[in-house]
Structure formats: structure tokens, C-alpha cells
Length: 215
Image (cartoon, rainbow, N blue to C red; front, side):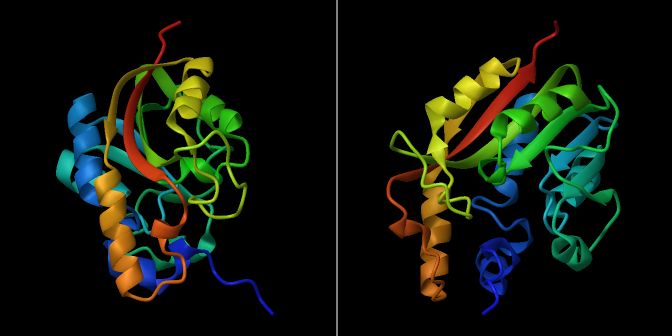
């Protein structure tokens, strides 16, 4: 029997979360843009761009020169607009050093096989002083189940902070948005999804803003 498609490729998540496929939708994207002071003309990368919703948002609403990388050919094919989208892995970015002023990585960082490698790539393609806008699930315990979904692989927030600091980032804002995760979980449960996030232990959801150190 074939393996079921991951949740982010299934219609029930799109029905529950819209094109962004994540808790909070564009509200957290806009909050991140506000915190970094995103300006027209900035070169911005959306890592794990999915259906390209954030990439399109950054172009249309903020006037950014936005690009998206997405490993799934299925998601790239389904994107309503493929402008700026590239099929590539988030930890093997096909861009030159210092190419971007900011990176958005929304609800995908927990899926990186080796998070430190991904952060090294983020740092490489960011210009000095560039920003990282990171939102994702976090667990309330000391470990991770190590499964295939973002909920299975969620780690404590402290561990993510330590990884960013070790990779050469300075963290200057962290916000708790667990309420948005619960709202999405309720919509998925109502739709009959077998992957109700309510059943995955003490999960939270955060928005973190970090900046590449100048040196």
C-alpha cells in the first residue's frame, strides 16, 4: 500500500488553513514583516513556500522582490502563481552568498533533517544584518518523537533558540501564538482529519525574529 500524502499536500489542510497551509495564515506573515520593517525592493526568500502564498503576498502587499523554494514538485505544480518559485531543498539553497535581506520560514523548520545545516544555509544567503522570520510548532518536553510530520518533529523552544544563537543569529523577538494552532487543530478535527494536532501532546506555536550577526 502506498504511503499517504503528507498533511500539507492533502485537501483537508487547504480547506482548513487556506493557501498558506499553516496556523495563523497571513496574519503571522504580516506580523513578521512589521517586526523587521520590510520595505519595497527588499530581496526576500520564502523557504518551504508550499503553494507560493507567502511569496505572492510579499510581492503584492510589500513590493518585495520575493522568491520561494519548495522541495515538493506537487506543491509547485499546484501553486496559483509560480512567479519566483524554485523547486529546491531548504538546506541546499540555489542562491549566492548574501543574496537576501530577509528569509521567511513558516511552519517548515521542524521538518529539516539537520536543523543546523539549514540555519547555516540561511546565514550564508543572508546579507550581514539580514533578518530571519521563523514560525513553527514547539513541544513542551525535552525531546522529539522523530516522526515524519512537523508535529512529530517539534522540539522545545529553548532548543530552537540555542540552535539559532549557535548558527550566528541574534534573537530579538519571540511571540507565543499557540491560540492560532489550536484554532487550526479544531478546524481539522471538525473536518474529520486523522492528524488532529490536539492529540500530539503539549504543542505550542511561536513567531521568532532573528538577525544575522554582522561579523
